[in-house]
Length: 308
Image (cartoon, rainbow, N blue to C red):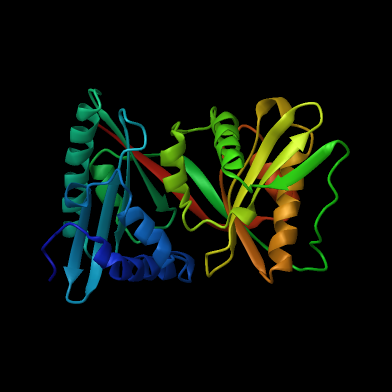
């Protein structure tokens, strides 16, 4: 039986991807994790893999993997944990190590406690009894939505009167998207402000096709919304973020950006697009996505514990 736990290195990316895809197949019926995403996590400049990652090998495969990072510079700490069924003891050891390390990181940040978040499929392979026994609880639910695409049904839309959309062609535009992102999401649950450089890395800017990032402009407001999409997932085209600043909401700009992304993906030959949404989003995003034909693919719960 596998009992050893060791830190991860970027050289483990293929094995970690295989583990995540094995978890995907059990939880959602098909693999949807790409190697470049895992590499981005393992190479994050703010993550000390020696102290912030945990692997449980079983021969040439992995049966559990955990990763911790600090998105806030304060008390909020994030963790990921993937475990195959029947590895309860190893999973519990990783959870204990994560909690201890989270408190250590939070104290270095000047906080007296760590508020730790873990995102799990609503029907996970991980034994959630371990979480409840350790005092974790669900504080939020997200839906991953998807939608079929067809070039005939999804042409590029005509912009509303007084509205223009442009690509993100320059460094100045990228800085502008970052500012719009911060303003659009500032009131959202668990939003963590990030400086431009950190945001670029978290976005995977080096691999990002900036032709799939758009800014929407209204005559009376200037730049007021954005959409960031990715076409580097095997499973489907992906809308990573869509946001409209508060002053421009209620004008149909979010829907226009969605239809624009649908049209571009359909023209590229994609047959499906997906995105994630907070089910308690206060800006009406779930209803917007429902009106545009997006339906439930699977649900994800945010689990939280407070470590003192």
